[in-house]
Amino acid sequence: MPVIDEFYVIAESGLCYYSKSKQKAVDQNLFSGIFSALISMSRQISSEGFKTSEGIKSLVLKNRKYSIAKKQGLLFVACTTPKVKDTLIHKELVEMQQIFLLRFSTAKLADWNGNVTIFRALDPQYDKYFTESAAKRMESLF
Image 1: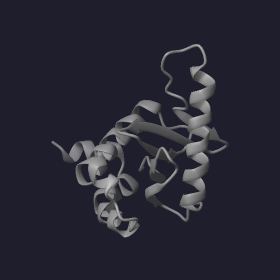
Image 2: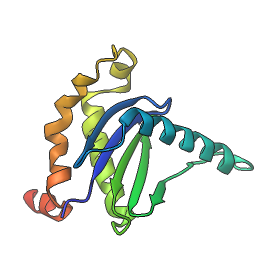
Image 3: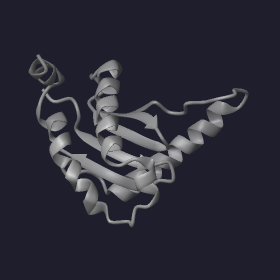
Image 4: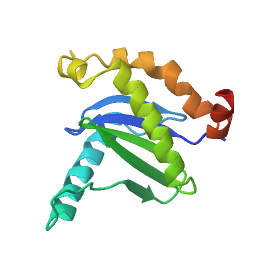
């Protein structure tokens, strides 16, 4: 069974660069803005008395778990069922980060003109995370 149900790439400012979902998802701009605010607030709260803080790493809402990985000023968010192990989700997110950053470096994003359709070129590379199980993808490597 595929692990990922929804996937988002969000700037820390709240701008959603990319989103993909198996089903109709919530409005990506609303989701990314609220999620970015939660991350920012969690950093402020959890950093009091600490030199560095990761903030929220995951958020569980009833039957949905949102796991977050941060890299180069971007939030990579995967939505799964709460039963999926954090180690598996993290592995998937690292792979998905690499795909995005190989195509769209932070330098390219700094010069981005606002046209979100350019990110649709990533759909074929991300499709496998929505249609194949992690075990099946691993088998295909050997």
